[in-house]
Length: 464
Image 1 (cartoon, rainbow, N blue to C red):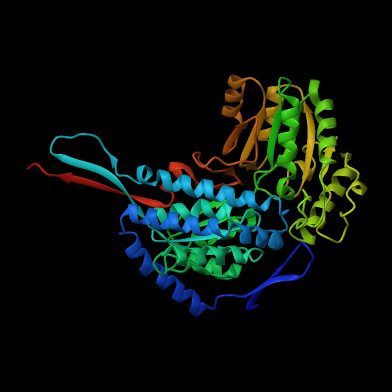
Image 2: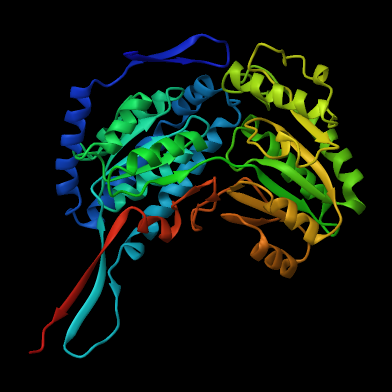
């Protein structure tokens, strides 16, 4: 069994970081320390927890330049875009801190003569946060900050592709003055993660963001105990462009939703359904905009599209595209227009396809890259049917000038988040959740705190 993990940078293929995996003894020690810290931290007044968490946020933000550069080298995002992840981290973290007092307040049960009755939200104990590489700060903050605010200790395990992000978190925690054991990171193998969840004295909750298969493994490990994991998994997110949409806005927004982060986003747009009267104009505009992207070395500030995370990921999408073309799909982007794109490397040209249908994997299976299939639809009913014809349900979007129509359609589409005239974005005031194979549970918003606490009812009869 490997005792180290290696981070291969997709930028140039070199080893960017190498870390020793935690030994069983180190894992035991970290768990004991976290449990002891949780006991004290959970009884620390919320105002003091919020003060220290705010200092943690400040310390992470102070590292923004270093973090942005490291993220680019670890997973390949263009350096011009990496700072936006830090901005999103700060927005979510400060929002959750700002609403914590109200969200974690006792819930009154109403007046009843001779009684005091309320429900209190108590911390779960030790929360394991398993974070992915594609948005290593943005995905982890959804659980790390509210878990700490709620009084839990956090063990943080980042992807082997982005281990330095976990280390920066704990550096910031020490600088902020968080008590020892309240926020610690571990470099772990998949087997060690499963053991940490399934063992009788293991963690009390796991917040996982990753693949569907990874989520199934987490679920199986948690099934051995009475803990319910939070799972944010894959997506095949659709958008519908109605005939009354602002077409320029729809094209600009959806192409960004397809290509941003090289399409490596769970809530990126992968399926686009367009009303027949505007289909040709939409496709022409989308193709023209995609051709303006610049694929290349992501440390170049003029580059707008970096490599995929690894060559194997690019090869898998190329195979998916080849299969679709053999089945009748048509690729509209000439790969030669992107000189950096080369088979056998993670540098992959973006692609728009037409003549696609739901018999093709390209419209049904997850595609973690800058690729989207575009289909014409007859009407709203046709669009809803196709949008729901998926085993995923993370986000979906409609582009229209009609607010009432957007609301009606949103009631019918099977999704965790429904957008109008935007996509591929999170609002921390709203619950972030998915259905079907996109996961279970919830982060962010007031609702997110409910998944990081347990209710305890106080039923006090004081008049005898």
